[in-house]
Image 1 (tube, rainbow, N blue to C red):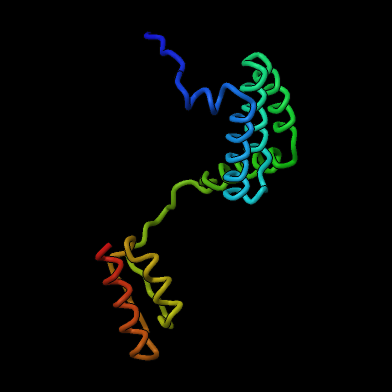
Image 2 (spheres, rainbow, N blue to C red):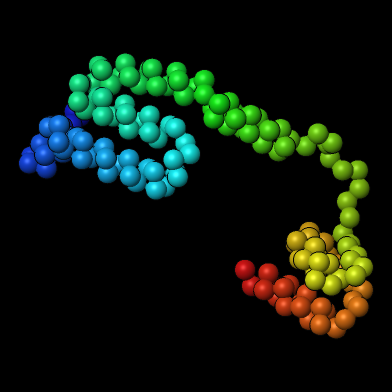
Length: 153
């Protein structure tokens, strides 16, 4: 594997090799992170703190700070909440009921107005035959407009 040389030049010196450049770069990144996250997530700010430490005091200090920050973030309430969301999402994806005994090819929608048309549109790819009972002719045309729109996609 070929070793790559670290970037050199005036831009690298101005941004990464002096205190003013590092502060400027971290401040710009902090503004961007605040704008994108709304200040709700602690991890991006901890990452910026670690990067600043590593650039200012060297890689060893950056790695030590990373270990400390990772430990704090791993035990935070946000981390625990995200882990529980992950496990809940994984459990919801599992089918605990097994395969269905019967398969159905027909769907009947009684009262196929606005809501019935929406229900039928969701199940349209899965059924071969539809039966609709329409109360008003407007909804009949509305439903077929939705079906045609869905078929074009």
